[in-house]
Image (cartoon, rainbow, N blue to C red):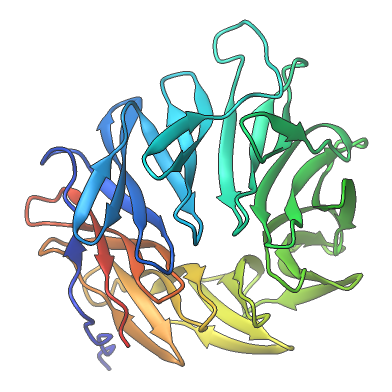
Length: 357
C-alpha cells in the first residue's frame, strides 16, 4: 500500500546571502518579523545576517547569530578557527561581551551566548581563569559567574522572563545534572533515578524540561515542575526520548526514538504523536500556539529530507527551492518556520516559510 505524501505548504522565501556560493540558514526570529541567521563563507568563519521587511543587513567580521528577543536585540557568537566570543547587537550597534576569565594559550578565552529574554538578560557560558567553562549571565558587557554544582564546569542554555536560568553542570561526583538558577542560587534538579540529566528549556511558569537517565538505564524526556520530576516516557515501542522545547501553555515537544525517529506533544499526561509511516521525523521547534516544525525523511517516497510544519494533527511538507532537500531550524512566535533549502544547484540557501494562517 503506498504511503501518502504529506500536503505541500506555501513556498519557501529566499533570504539572499552575501554571495551565491555560501550555504546559509536562518536560526531565530521574533514576533515582529526580525529574522537572523548566518552563511558559512569560509571553513572557519561565517557571515551573520539580520533580515527585516525584505532587507538583509550583514554583520562585520565572522558571526553566528543564535537568538533575538521581542525588542530586536540579537545575540550570538563571533567565531574564528580557535576562538568564540559572545556578542550583542542592538539597533545597529555591535558589542563583544566580556569573559569570566581565561588562559593565554590558543583558544584560552571562549564564550557563547545561547539565549536572551524579554528584558535583555543573556545567558550562555564563558571560560574562567582555571581553564574551565562556567554558565554566565550578561546584563552589561561583563558577565556574572553562575557557578557549578560542585564540579569544574557548567553551561546555561535558556532564560525565562522572570530570570530563571536553566542548564547543566558537572557535580562534585563527576556526573552531569540539570540545574535551575534563581535569585542568585543554583539548584540541582536531580534525575529520574539514573546518574545524569540535562535541561534544555524553561517557560514562564517556571517549568523546566530536558532529559534524564532512568534507574533502568534508559534515557527519557523529563519535566521538572513544583518540586516534582516527571518522566514523560516515549512513544509505544520506542526505547528513548528527550525534550526539545516547552511553551507557555505547558505543552512539551518530545523527540522519541526506536526503530524509527518520531516525536510527540505532551500536555498534562497526554501524548499526541507526530509520526510519518515508513519515515523518520526530527522535531526542533514549538511555539505558544502549539505549532511544531522540524525535518521529515520518508525513504519510501524519495529518501530525501524536507522541512515540515505540524499544527493540530496535520503535518505539511514545506518543500524546497527546487532542489532535493530542506530543513527547519526554528519557528517564530507567529508561526514562521526558519531554516534552509536547496536550489537545483544543490546549495543550501537561507529561507523562511510564511505562517499558514
